[in-house]
Amino acid sequence: MENEVIAEWTPEPHHEAFSGVLNGGIIGAILDCHSNWTAAWALMEKNKETTPPCTVTADYAIKLLRPTPTQNKVFLSAKVLEIKDSLAVIEATLTVNGKICATCRGTFVAVKPGHPAYHRW
Figure 1 (tube, rainbow, N blue to C red):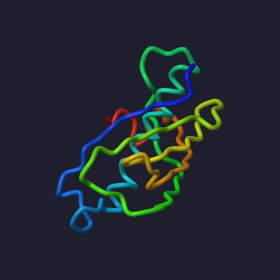
Figure 2 (cartoon, helix red, strand yellow; figure 1 turned 60 degrees about the vertical axis):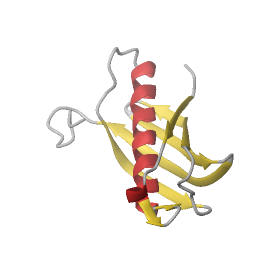
Figure 3 (cartoon, rainbow, N blue to C red; figure 1 turned 90 degrees about the horizontal axis):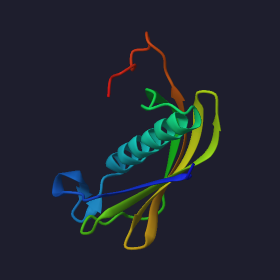
Figure 4 (cartoon, rainbow, N blue to C red; figure 1 turned 120 degrees about the vertical axis):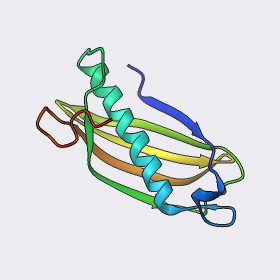
């Protein structure tokens, strides 16, 4: 199993905190989402399933390292640091113009039927 999931995204003006700079809440949301999908994919691969499990964020922390410009594409990269049972710890980065602008580390868990988030996405 490969250990990294990558994506690119193009911000629009309504994603800005102020002219030319991405909003910190948007940064947190896309890193959380990208990390969550990385966890779901990794758990699916680990358990040799054909569909990803429903996963939720147990915890995550964002570090905003520099202003994130919105004039170019944003690149997301996430990798598995730890995986066991129904839990994955993920580390992710958000990069623009070759510079890391933000990082994330989080724990994501698979949930079962009866959980409010089960099959919500």
